[in-house]
Length: 437
Ligand code: XLS
Ligand code: NI
Ligand code: NI
Image (cartoon, rainbow, N blue to C red; front, top):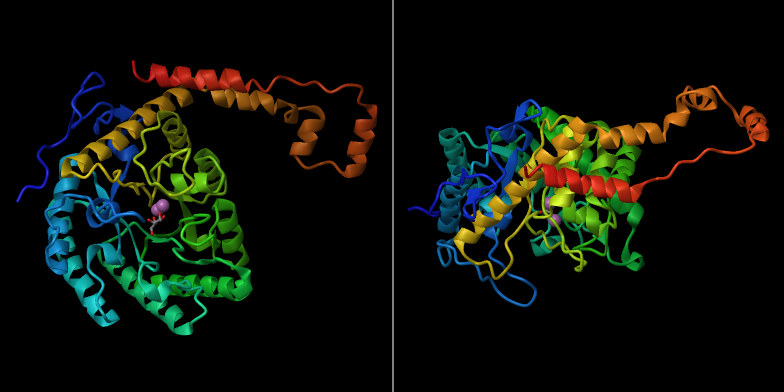
């Protein structure tokens, strides 16, 4: 059975074919590396294959060949479709939750055996196609037992179930050679402090992560552990609010050396940050591990998980990625879903093309920005007062409040320059335009 009509190829920026790349040209070199190397694209199993467009007001709309099949048969067919999809698009990686790939059964034992069955098929497909697992994770939020949280549940039995499910998800991620393993605290947070012992919940969350680190070392899993911050949804207050709060948490519990951050665009904006802020903050702390790439709607306050088609932000994301020299254990995972009325199989293909092209275009913009050095030069000159005189002494930490008071008392005027924000923003627009040439 063939699931997707066409193999997608690069036709250049003049093409009007929705099933062709206009910017993503995998073998094209940008700053010494191919686009394919810079952009380790990944397919999210859940949004692409498992979910069907349900929302709080209506049922699934997606037209999928596995609709109506027995759950295991449907899971098997999704494997076929997923690998064909990656093949036709030239996407090298995928990511999954345990429950996206195989159906959850009544008991953990049966769920594990369902998972093993599908994972074996996936392993064969990986061998045949050379596709790789970017990361695996455990779904600790759908099953009703997690209604009060998973590792932060007030119920010890639920804590135990969350640990058992995580152990299994780690086993299969290890078996499939995953580059990373993600912890997104689905329901790790609270709705009201009137019924919540926040200290106990945070201690338990840290203990859960510590046991996962121990288990990782025991089985010899070399992948990276990633925390994915999100400020709200489903709970009103999620503990992993943003990059800064995750770093504080990891440092408090001495876990930081085992983890990096998986930054998701729409989660950044839900936290009231630009995604640029979140990745820059992670990067300057040597903690930017990977990226869940999507976009939110500026007018909606929830996780809309849209395909990234905003070139302005894509350019800034790629600017940060190039500054970091790329990812080592990370990638660009399309944690993105088609809009509910985009119900056809072809829409899946077209939406990934739109996202991949936007990021490839962003990469071209970023490389021009870096090569030109305009923003770097501007920042260097803005802070240049720290390079000589009193500034040099501050930079080399050779001052005290007393010596600075002595200096400040002699100051007659302070020299300022304009912040030039509008000039810089206009310049960024020019770089976007130049990258289309
Ligand atoms: C949900 C999260 C989730 C994680 C993996 O908002 O983004 O999809 O990426 O559990
Ligand atoms: Ni995500
Ligand atoms: Ni999300």
